[in-house]
Length: 333
Image (cartoon, rainbow, N blue to C red; front, side):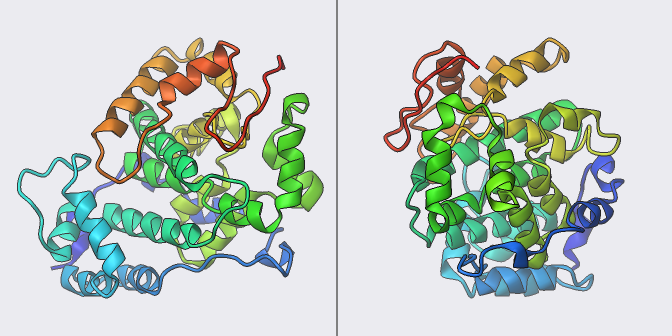
């Protein structure tokens, strides 16, 4: 049986020429622009094989399952995921083949890729970013993007995976180029500059370009690559003729949420502004929904810093961040 028989997706998302958007945006950038000393992560071998085999129209569920079963970590994570409250299965799933059959190719691929990329990044100890807090914030952004994608009536699974992956390269490059990022953090309270603008100014490239280029080299689907590539477009992405109601727009809105590096100086203020222009969008309701979903997950990521509390602490002018890793003083932009 071909797995593609069970695949479904958003027609709006599928009508977008993601490859053309990716080619145009990356036309003037290659990974060779990065410092030669920068050690980029590598995907687990099983993930690479899975990606290659999944592009074969004749690939069966059994063939794809056998690839995942060669990696004990991926197997355990997939089974834990499919048996969690996240998927809502009534009967326990015991095999990788059952799990892939239940999720379908697109969702299975998204989970395998995000899990593999997380493992690759976590293998590198970060000098600046607390990994637990980083992945907690990434999961919050992913849940937020998925709920926002529902409002946009676009592909929720691509939005979830794209938001989870949007900053995947930051723990690596902030370690390899730690001096540059420490200067950014130290001057953050007096410098309302987007982090990606700072990166382009001092490095000549930003983490969105680098992350998207590496993801493309790994042969990730173009829609995921574009979600990474355009995740710092902010509210202006909503006016884009192709991306305005796409998963990439949901990811870009999630990127405005707070994180350890405070990449968007006034991200939450922008989301508040959006509330006044889009009646269906409520930051408080979405943040509360994200916290509710986060608490119901069994993915091994504790929600020590609920999103609703983070949003209120920033907008109320209290200490912007206090997770034990970065403490950025509050100023009025």
